[in-house]
Amino acid sequence: MSLVIRKCKLFIIAVLFFLASCANPFNPDSAQTSNDVAQTVVSTPEATLLQLENAYNRQDIELYKECLSDSFHFILINSEYSEIGVDMNNDGIKDNWWGFEQEVNYHENLFTSGSSDGLIPTPVSVNLNLQIPPKSLWEQENETGENPVYIIPCNFDLVLTYSDFQDINAYGYSRFWLILEDDMWKIYRWQDESNI
Image (cartoon, rainbow, N blue to C red; front, side, top):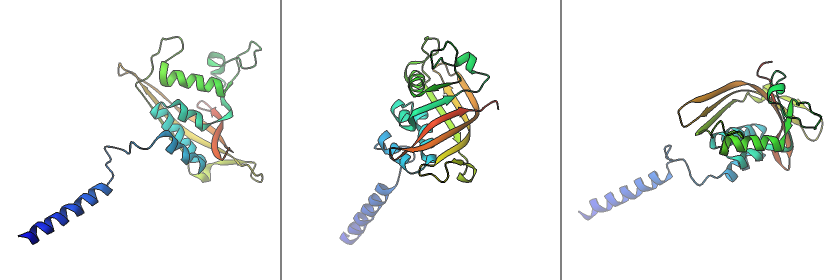
């Protein structure tokens, strides 16, 4: 009888070790923090774009800022800058671009407080999907220099879901210029080319 009990105990211990080593797909590792994700930025430009998706999907402004260069510029399509452009150089004319501070301000509103005029609330969820092409389709500037610049074209889908279950969908095409800055790949230019 004790041999049967001993075998049962060994079997139970083996099963417990096996179960302890299995990942539960319904309970992702909660120990992973935005800092863990940020470490992947060092490896490739693609990892930075994946972090950008993650920042949107988690509505995490700090993670989002880690994706951007301090010299970041967002470039609007020409058909939209007269409507949503910002006068960046104080000449009274709306420009077709804005910089890092304005970009962060827009995303703080998107992720945490809704529109600055209070008409649009904060979305309950944000889902960004970038279709990152294989590296063979990336362009490279400064191919002979020490600091390569990768230009990565991506189709994107963005869905904002609100508490009244209404969605705002945006889809289009953007190009991302990525540089190696402080040993991390950063986006220094994001150009919307959705209508081009």
